[in-house]
Length: 177
Ligand code: PRP
Ligand code: ADE
Image 1 (tube, rainbow, N blue to C red):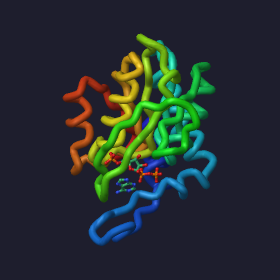
Image 2: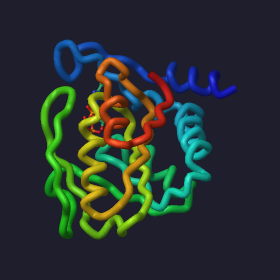
Image 3: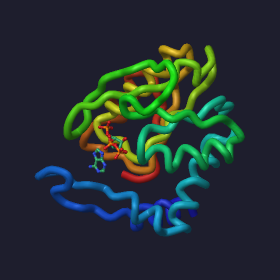
């Protein structure tokens, strides 16, 4: 049953070669989002996995992480916190630099978004090198939160992000490789 749901999700994702740079196989979730059954199934699997895990907050990373994090937070009955690219958040922020598969960037989170000892689930659409979520976990820790769980619709196993995050004490749940 779960296997057929995962196949549905996998088949809904289009791959674009050489985007945004030569040599990158871009896994495009917009085709998944356009399919309401595939979108709903991906959210339902995340709800099923985390509903009894005593999560206090869901953090989503800009931009594609927001799409999956917000409906999951609502379904779990907890707050949603956006982690954003630089200079988008209006109040005091914590800031972390990180590396992408194809470049570097900075992420920010409001200092008061996470309370001390809150158990935080990080959501992103895709796990590549793990740089985005490693930086996000550091932001959560700066606020005093516990960042031990992260989930992704897509994992790119060749880039070993899961190994990197596991070594940081983050349990990763991924739907499709
Ligand atoms: C993509 C993707 C993940 C991240 C994965 O985001 O949505 O957030 O890269 O890569 P990593 O595991 O190597 O960090 P991107 O920064 O391209 O931003 P976008 O969501 O705004 O398109
Ligand atoms: N983010 C980082 N690597 C990516 C890839 N290969 N496809 C889609 N998004 C990405």
